[in-house]
Image (spheres, rainbow, N blue to C red):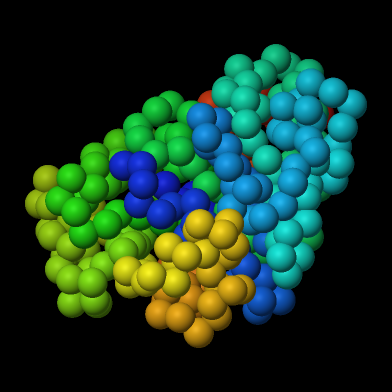
Length: 275
């Protein structure tokens, strides 16, 4: 199971819409995909998918519910975990809740190819936990200079917490590929100069009026307008992600949960009964 955090430094860059359409593109290739709404401030992933979530992560943590009880099936079999206030609670679990979270989360391992986290925008601790814990990060920016600088700030903080982080940069709402590559190269040059780190080009999504129409209708554009330029670019991104990863994915969900919850390795093992 590969874990991917989709994040941004600035709101309004189209991160959640990218998450939804990318998940569907992966599912259309017959991969098993779970999308986790990791934005406790907005938590609107289910709305963008056009589905209704009866339960959230908070219900699983606080009530007698399993991960399968809160998963909602979306288009092409994509399964969705609604986050809401449960994401905030996730950072302050007691021992019993940690144990339950591990047991339930571990049920996804082995039956899920891609676990995608749609984080909030910014530099908050809850956001960074997901970015630090994931196998890789897709950092979304627009060509707007303020958006790009905010993206750099996110990359800088991620690298400070996880020097081995693998970060791909996706330029959304670009006029064309030349513009997108120019923005990416500027970010890459700054990261190389001041952080001595590499950023990796994930591609770009062109500005597309079809996307705007679909957002208003609350419909994934890859389904409503599968041949538009944005849909084509999302499918190209999914093809990049399904290639052999240029890093070693985590061999188990243990290390991911330990990083996400900020737990010591030995303590985690004891809590889930490994010792």
